[in-house]
Length: 378
Image (cartoon, rainbow, N blue to C red; front, side, top):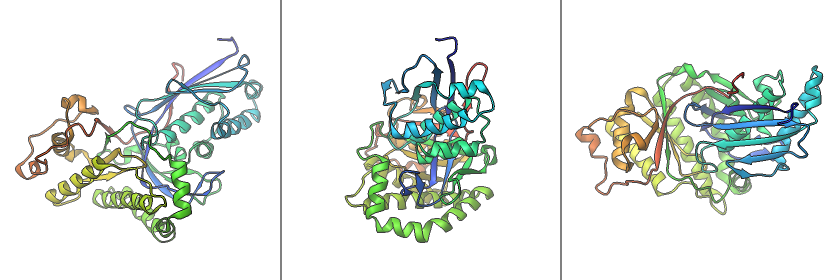
């Protein structure tokens, strides 16, 4: 490496929307039709890692994603890069100003399925912007970086923060802000059930455009549903009211996928295993006589389940009995739960023909923090 070259390596989390973002009022600026609320997941188990290197020897910008060469000329990539360079060029430090003219080499990888409905673009662009800000030693506030990350992927603006985050569609600039820190609800747990690691057939950008043009249900949602639902969800989070939080989460996921079906031609992101998970959660809650588990699905078949720590061993035992086909400490990754012998009523949830193997594995994690520098001196 040239003696003038500099590198920085950072990781950034995925975030899971519990009030969904689907559709834009401005495609170029990536302004959403409505506010959304998300939960940032722990980077101990799911993250994007990005190394950015700048140097006078590079003749063009380049990006490698998951060991595949990408286009350094991509519009969204260049949008983020040009905005970061503008900040660097206006720095009071002459060395930073000089570096703003250098080309950049990006190497980025996800340790979870990409383009499969697990917010890989959110963590990816959040990590890109955060890493470049570290590399150029910018003194930017997270909210400023949030606005920059949005230019790459809308939901990336939420991954700049930990905990519980709201993205405001009508703020100037259009940014995300925290509702509560990760430590606010220490009992909350998340199970990410990986049903498929295959890329979806219709990407989110195209799917949103199609829905915005053709779905009357999306129009109704924006005008009559989301505003109240956002406030109800915010209150449920602040009060740590799991029952309220869980019901709103599931209803919003259901409405999102109803919009996908109302889109013309329709969008199919869930599959039969996704539907089986939904049915299992509702039957489990019915037997438990209270809402103990919530599901949500983004634009893909993979399920994200929320529950509290007190419930995790009981539910994980049922979930494993239905879907697990490998030893439980391989099926569950991350914070592997202890399994229990299901009680008779809960055991009845296991179908005669179990759906073994239809969930590849399940990651167990907590609510987490935002991006961080993992350089040895970072």
